[in-house]
Amino acid sequence: MIQLCSNDDPPVSFTVPRKAVELSKTIKTMLEDLEGFDMEQTPIPLPNVDAPTLELIVKWVEQHQDDPPPVEKPRVEDDDSDDSDADDDQEPEVVIPEWDKKFLPTDDEQKNQLFKLLNAANYLEIKPLLDIGCKYVADKISGQTVEWVRDYLNMENDYTPEEEAKLKEEIAWAEGL
Amino acid sequence: MFGHRKASTSSNGQHQRNGSGSGNGHSFEPSSSSSLMVNRSQLKRNGLQPNKRPRTDFLEKLNIYRSWLAEFDDDEKNVFIRELLSHSGTSQIHLLSSLLEPRLHQDCPPNCQDPFASVPAPIALLILGYLDPASLCKCARVCRLWRRYANEPYLWKKLCRTPRSYRLSCAAAEKKHLEQFTDCDGVVLWKEAFSERYRLWRNWYAGRCVVRTFEGHTQGISCVQFDADRIVSGSSDNTIRLWDIRTNCGLGTMTLTGHSATVRCLRLDGNRLASGSNDFTIKVWDLSVNPTWSSIACRQTMIGHTNFVRCLQMDCEKIVSGSYDRVLKVWNIENGQCYGTLTGHNEAVLCLQYDGDKVVSGSADNAIKAWDLRSGQCVMTLHNAHQNAVTCLQFDSDRIVSGSLDR
Image (cartoon, rainbow over all chains, first blue to last red; front, top):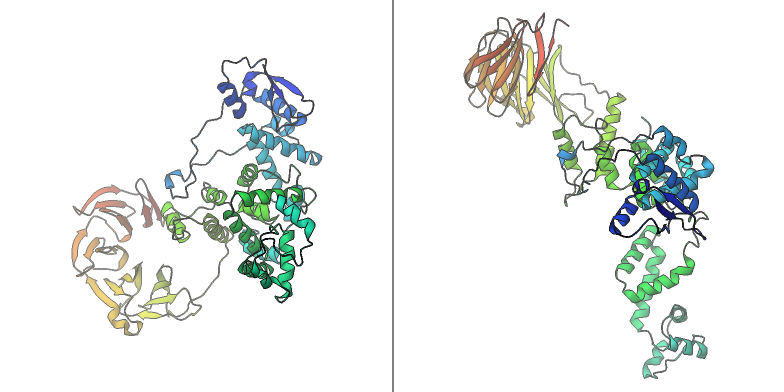
């Protein structure tokens, strides 16, 4: 078992099976680097993750600890060359499993929690969690109006009306079908 | 630092004489313009060491820069600041950091520190990567930051490579299309390339088109060919007409006369046009010839078939033709000589295609035959490929697709 500590004061600690914790590439690498030390006794501080978020992370990794490991594909460098061989080398489509759909903090009041979770998944390099979370947000955004997206993302419209009009014209090709 | 504090107690800046007592102080007397005076006090406020007298030309330059900034819009100011940053040393960066520290996020929207609003770029890009093109464009309209994310070429490259959607007909067509969107440094403008493809795709599936009518033939039209600039049509009025796709002019730009019966088949390749006719002949035309001399546009007439010429294909050396006389003929395009006759069909040859030395033909005898051009022999026959005449076909490396009057 491994202990993880949140960044709260005082820190909240969670005890997680090593197998589950290793879904985080960041922690897995760290544990490998510290091979030989008794990590069971050493809590790992996570300076970027607060307790509610860490709780979610722990819940997710425990649920998914027995998943078959994702197939690692060598990352193709984006060199802008016309490598037509790689043409159809697409990542498989991300499908959010039922359990995860219920797990993700998807209520509108939980927006910030959702994004804290994505940030943490990014920091801890838990790619499958990051993928489904981003896919969820993308599904939520797609097909919505600009105003809706802006509101959802808590973004301020920093365009001048002229810029907005120009931009609208620039991307008119993508409007409607 | 120490010098600065000492000076600020001794002066409020207006008529500061520098301590070194050099005789050049008069160049900063009130005789110089008042704007310069203001500048000096400003300079001190902005941290110029008071005991260091600014060079005259520095003040002038500073003024020039001020007038520039007054003209710059926001984007230009941002460019300017980037430019300044790239020319800054550690001392300037340190100054910037300490100046900016208390001002960070001062004028930002209240939620700018919101975990949701400050989505790190990798997460934002991951989200945008799951979006369809229309939603991606909408995200560009959300705010400047998201516009920067949404313009990321990698996202558009990914869309360009989505299997099945927004694809052009074949890899070669896509390659050619991408070349148009590659700048002189070899950088592909993925977003622009995609938007063009998307437009094509959308128009195609929405059936969106402009109908333009070209009128001029006096009898029915039996065949057409086209390229990017023009349409060529063959008609039962024995003529071939050329039409300009670019102009809305409904009048033919050129009329080729010479055949004495219906023009039944055409092939256009650059400026070379081949036509087969019910007058049993094939003609090769040079379209680069001055349109007013249309009579000499015909370069070659191939005589040999003993019935209507129904189908043909050409390359830069030869023409292969099929005729109601039941044979296919191979012609030298330069001298017009027939150097091969493929016999075997029991009825009119209605369609053909060749690729390299391989020829496939379809006939009114319901059969499809494959031929080897080197030997002139039929290498394969599909008897009763259809229950009626085979009128059209296409083949590639592993299949033949054919159409027939048997429906």
